[in-house]
Structures are given as C-alpha cells and as structure tokens.
Image (cartoon, rainbow, N blue to C red; front, side, top):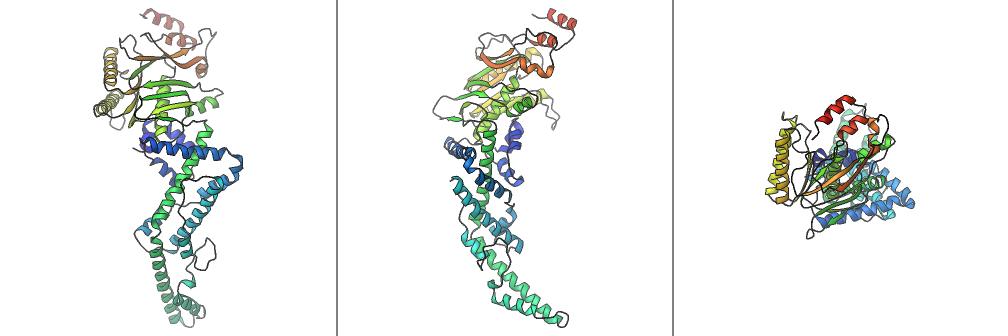
Length: 465
C-alpha cells in the first residue's frame, strides 16, 4: 500500500503532506506513490538520509547552497512524456530535444550543489556524453537547435535558401525547404537514437531528483515540528509501540492559532489489547489518531512528532473511528464499523502483524450488545497477540486486559461559566494506568460548567447508578 491510500485512512497524514514544501504535482505524485515499508534495514538507511538532510538544513553555512538547490528543484520540468518517447526509440521533436538538454544541465548543477552541501545520497548519473550530443559546437549553452554541424547537406541547403528569393524562384525555394525538412528529420532521428541509449540514466536521475526534493521537504517538516528519529524495534524483540511526548501537528497548529498549546502525551503499547477510558473531550480520539499517524510516518520514512519513539514494524494499521458513515455504499456508521472490524478479524486469522486502534467500537448500538461486541473484540485481539488500543465508555466489563485512563478534567474549582473553546485549558490529557474498572464520571460536571440548565443536570444525577 502507498502513502496516498494511507492518507485516506489515517487523519493527519494529508495535513503533513500539504505542509511539505514540494515544487508541484510532479514531486507530490512521487510522495503519494511512496510504499509502506516493513523492511527495518531499509528504513534505518532512509532515516540516515533524512538525518543528514536535517543537519544540512540546520547548518547556516549551507543555507545559500540549499536556496540554490531549492530553486533548481522548481526548474525541473515534468518530462515523463519525453522520456517515454526515448524509451520506445521514437523520434523527438526540437522541443523534446531541448527538454533533454535542459534536464541534463540541471542534473549537472544539482550534483555540484549536493557536493557543496555534503549530501552524498541520491547520486545522479553523469550525462556529459548526452550533453555533447546535443551541443556539437561546444557552446555550453542550455538552448538547443538543429545545428549546421550535424549535417553538411543540411548546412548547404540552409545556405542556399538564404541566397534564394522565394518571390523570383519559388520552385527552387520550396525544393530547398523540402531538403531542409528531410535533413532535419534525419538529424532528429539520429539524435533520438543516440539519446535512447541514455534513457535508463535519464529516467533514474528524474526519479532521484524528485526523491532528493522529498528528502529535504521531509527534513524541513521535521525541523518545523521538532520531530525525532524513531527507533525501529528488531523483529526478534518483543513488540512495542512506545511514544514519549507525542504531538498531533494539525491540532497543535489550531491550538497555537487560538493562543493555546498542545499537551504532549506519552503511551506504550505491547502485542496485546489495551483499553483507554476517559470522559468526553478528554482527547481519547486524538491519542488514537496520533498513534496511527506516528506508526505510518515511521514506515513511510518520516521522523515523528514526539520526543522519543520506539516502534515495532507492522504490515498494516487499522484506525476504526465509529462515527463515520460509509456514504458511498449507503451504510450506517454501525454497519461500516462492523465491516471494518470484520476485515480486522480476517487479517488476525491470516497472522498479519498489525496495529489496531478503535475509537469506542459499537457505541452506536444498544449498550448491552455494544459491551458484548467490545469484549469479543478484546478477546480476539488477546488471542492473536495484536498490538491495540481501544477507547471506550463502557465500564465494569470484567476484562482482565491492561487499562489506561486519561487523567481528565481538572477544573472542579472553576467559578462561573466556562468558554467551550477554552475547555482544553482545564484538561489533563496524560494517560495513567487504571487499576479500576469504572469510567470517570465527569460529563455532568463539565456540562454544568458550560452553563447547561441546572435543573436538567440535577434530574440527570438522579439516574446515576
């Protein structure tokens, strides 16, 4: 599966992709096609590249070179069509021949800039021979034309046509024009055939320039959000997803714009289920979405928005958010959620290593059946040793699995009415081990502070058990 597919399933990935400084759709296409890697050695090598890119961007002495390189990235045209023509050994026109010459010059300039910056990855193939083919007069210029030096017959015909008056001798002038067109076609055929030998290196350089731009865009993103290099856990060690001080960039940006700040959260999961409880507005859903994003970012060779992270690699990440209807098939949120869970069961049965993050599963059905579904899910996850975190409002389920709880609301002494948009200031989003089985009762107190009708709240309290 590629980045595009994951960004449809996991909130936050598209936001970060949009934050990346990419020069256009050409490079974004490469990003979207990036594969989800389960190869630890490959990921560690990629993290080395990204770390070096971060070091270069952090070096003030390298800033002028990096500005030039960034400008060069913006000058790379999308020449996929021209490269396809070369691959098939078709005859290029003058514009396409110019595109190749211009691209060869850019490759040469990019290689020099990378050497100056000390970036030794994504090495570009030298293409001096291709340049000489397109620059027979050794002008050294980027522009291209079908030079007289390519063909003596062409040169002679061109000379004659300048000496011929089309008004006085139109027949001769037309004949010379036909000769010129035929000779120019012959030259283009010869050049295209010669350049087709360089197709593999040209295509590889085209790909590498896009990847190079993505590396530096990833590095800028990492520096922007103080991201850290994740530690990938070897496959022969116990599975773990341990993240210290994780932040959700999209939410953090929104809070910053409102004058607030995101409280970093730490959590550790093992290859077994864990329940997460807490009142509404306590950030349970954010925890799930951020963990899914961090797992995916790691396996797409990004640094992660956390102080520290140790991550076991998985083959897939399932984020089940139960309030999303499947409008494309006319399914209710419950039906869509059940089908998601069914796909998870099938992957469990197939032995797929995965991370499962479910937000209050079965909350849209009646409580008795909802609790039963939740218990069955936990039992299946336990049986198949699946790393998972399931948020829930159901309490006293009698489950023996590990439980975490959001510390929750800390504004009990607040006087007066609370602004709903400022509620986060009174929430402690830290996760703590929960030895009990009940869910904290904070909803009515929060409702009171928000100014909800007092008699209504008193009536609701009568029904608390």
